[in-house]
Length: 101
Image 1 (tube, helix red, strand yellow):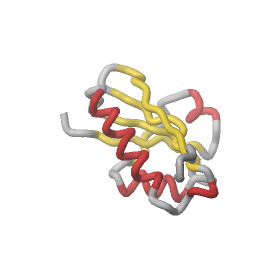
Image 2: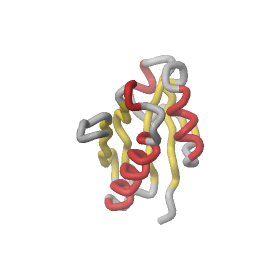
Image 3: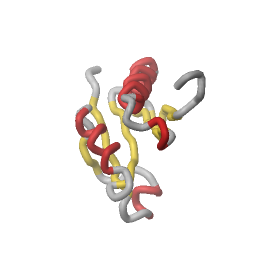
Image 4: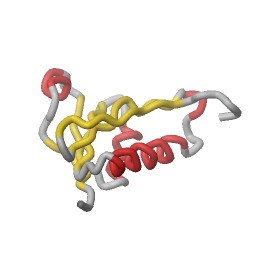
């Protein structure tokens, strides 16, 4: 925003055909400007470049309710924990989006 970095995310391959979106974060002062959906679109484009048919992420069901709502609006659904974090931390939910092959 106005030349300043206000958000970050990353995409990693966690197994063949499966990508994970990591740490979607928008600075609180920049929230509410439609940045998160744009970042999610870009992350999904990277997952497409990686030829991932499944995209996973982890979020907090308690602290990240708006983010979880955004993910659901894109078609992400809750799945069983797929990482150690999801098995160790009580309010972490795991989500997945199945993409066209």
